[in-house]
Image (cartoon, rainbow, N blue to C red):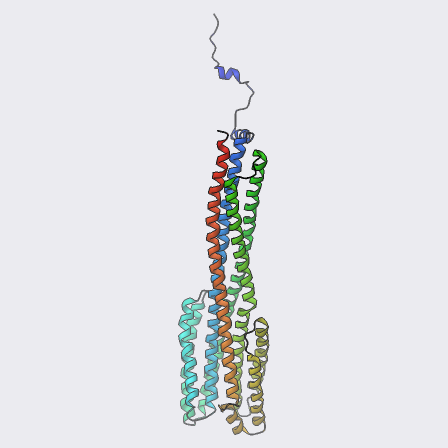
Amino acid sequence: MTAPLTTSPAQVARPADAPAATPGGRFSAGLATTPGRLALATTIAVAACLLLAVTGFLAGTGQSAALHDAQRDAAQLVGTQELRNDLVSADATATNAFLVGGLEPAEARARYEASLSEAAEAVPALAATARGEGEAADLATVSDSVQRYAGLVESARANNRQGFPVGAAYLDQASAALRDEVLPTLDGVAVSTSERVDDDMGSVSLAQALLLFVLLALVALAAVQLWLARRTHRVLNTGLAAASVALLVGGIVAAAAVLGGNGVARSVAGGPYAATVATSQALALATDAKSMESFTLIKRGSGADFEESYQESLAEAKNLLTSAAEATDTGSDPLALLEEWDTRHAEIRALDDGNDWDGAVAAATSTADDSAGAAFTAFTDAAHADVEATSTAAVDRLGSAATTAQVAAWVALVLGVAGAVAAAAGMNVRLKEYR
């Protein structure tokens, strides 16, 4: 009796050593057919469109955020320097008014109070927008030190009105508190803020790296179209053509915005922003030199160190104004006005060195049109106007570039997604021909 067969027909049909089908094998087999290759081409085309959508969006939004950060930090730096200028200006005014003796001129008192008031209002505003580590705490110490400075100045004024020599000592203490406590702290805040601006500008340029993926997406979609035209012997596929137009427009918009934003950042950094920083620093140095001029006379024969400080500050201020003029043309010439004041200062020093102290004091405190005071006021007015003009230009240009980059990001995203839909629809038409 013959034993029944226990092997199925399927087992008999397949040789014992034939390998079982694997996912990789099935994939390779699928690519051997035209429908399989069309499906792969569809995937590549859709992925290319989505790649442009994502990278274009990330490049635009990333650059927009960097530009906004640069805009905010640049404004913070200018605000910090203006605060410093207000304090130095208040000190210069108080020191110059001290030379008059007795009750200082009402105009000088008003300038002092205006500068100190502006400084007091600026501190909390800057502290609220501070981003650096410890900057808010540093600005809080500045507020306390400014109050202490104001108290010492009031003591100096009270004693000076009564003719007490101790008034000069109080003024020395006030000025020392400002220069040893307040100004170094503000300089530290300004340095850290300036470093953040540089980092922001660097981040703006990093967005350009993502444009390589945008180019890759365009190349991939072009390769799919070329393959499809050769495979089907048809030149035009409406869906792929629409996707190509969408990707091309999206790529151009994203590239133009990102490259343009980087160009704006570089031109602002080397133009109005650089001019703003240089002019503001020059203004602070010149104002400090004004204080040194007054202290030289207050010390009556023992103020050589103050005159040396005057010369150092003025030389640096002139170099900074030269740099500012090279960075951008505002149509004004604060450097010429600063040199005019320096000429008047030389006349004051000639009187004092010629043992005419009273004449030197009269020249230093005069407000006549041809006086040193009038020349210094003309310089500060021009410098303040330049700082306002260049800082406004820098902030506006950075803000405009940030908005453009943000809009371009959404354009790239929308067109990329639309291109993916169009590419899928166009390829699906070809796939249906094999079903």
